[in-house]
Amino acid sequence: MKILYLLSVVVFLVLLTAPEFSQARLSRKKCRRRGGSCHLRGCPFNSIYLGKCWIGSCCQSQIFD
Image (cartoon, rainbow, N blue to C red; front, top):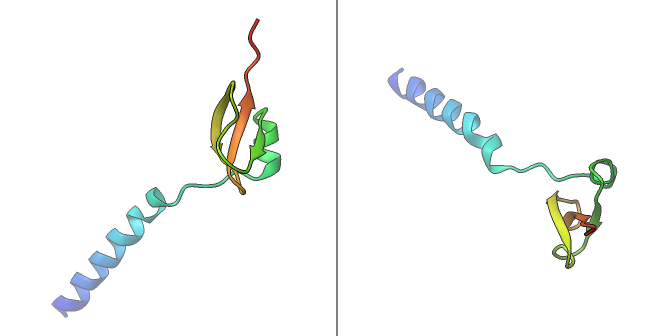
């Protein structure tokens, strides 16, 4: 019975911390709602990284005045 208790505690702790390791990827629509666009590799020059996109990086172009 003690093994069952210990096993259930270990499973609970593993499932509790699991969402920290998975980072949600942005869909193309969500990236565009944030004002960005999806790029296959890293962000181009003069752009800001907004998050991971489904194919690479979600980046927003930066306009200088």
